[in-house]
Image 1 (cartoon, rainbow, N blue to C red):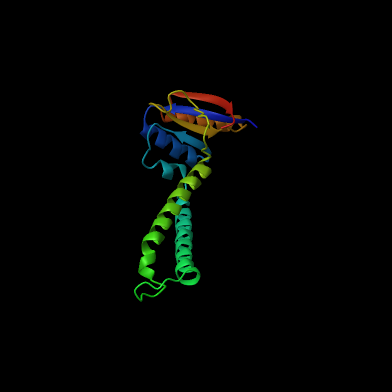
Image 2: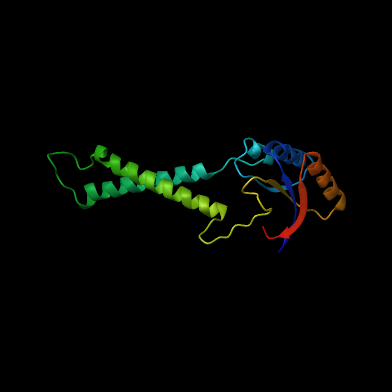
Length: 174
């Protein structure tokens, strides 16, 4: 299914941020914003919630820690107890380095995997640029186009009032 979009380009980050804020105040749905560098305050202007990625990191790290402690306890106490110098089998301080390493390893790898999965990034995926030069020096905002002509006229007025250089209507599967 192909969607219809209204793509506007801007010269600078400030006019783009103002246009995004105004479009959201007018109840237009901003599909995405493209810029050659991160823009401070754009997440708030777009109304993007905080990411849940730290929760994934925490839960996977916790499960890695539990796995490391369980494995070490099982091998040192239940499966192969070795009496070394009269020390107890459950020597918790000896478990610290392996537990730390497995916690960091599992949480780091699974955070990257979750990021790639959530962002739909995979090997061989081709880039789809909405406007030429968006990765160099062009800022772009993409609005989902509605069938109502009055609303699209209002959207064009908002974009032009905030300094949109070029406004294109595109049909694509973004």
